Length: 211
Ligand code: C5P
Image (cartoon, rainbow, N blue to C red; front, top):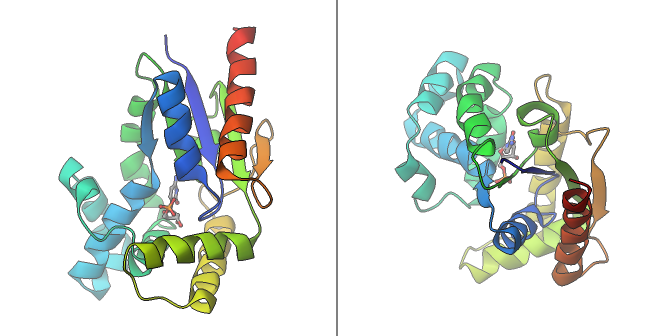
């Protein structure tokens, strides 16, 4: 029996941490779909300017391997921006759809997090969550993560990057980041990560007990 939890939301709202914790709690598999776009974005950066041409970027997406998702350097601000640029290309999105849909349907349950999971990849998901927070608090959290991992960044630049990426993700024609009609919104601006995880687990448990 499959059970699908779709978790969407803007950059650095806590989706990744919540998704991992939820997957561990319920024993579900977890896919961070942002990694697919980051994998293609990283290749695009390494390739050439033409990699932002739809047919070249599509090819890079089709050639993505599991090793590409384990590569170093996927979490840098440059790769995040490149990911959001190639993510507007419809051919890139189509090339990545089947993998995500197949992952979602595995028996034993799955948690997928991204921007279009509840709207496009798994519109029939059993639970849809939209995790959000103010841009300022998200930038602060991302700034801490980046500096803790040894990257040299300015908070004001991180805030600008977060705002630019959200605007691009929310305004694209194909699969924009929007709150699905039937999603439960969790605003983590004033929540500790523990409280946010607890809120997510409570919503999922309520749905599971309804069968
Ligand atoms: O979630 P993360 O910040 O790693 O995603 C990087 C970028 O990948 C996002 O800014 C977005 O442009 C793109 N993305 C997407 N659809 C998804 C997941 C990520 O367009 N489902």
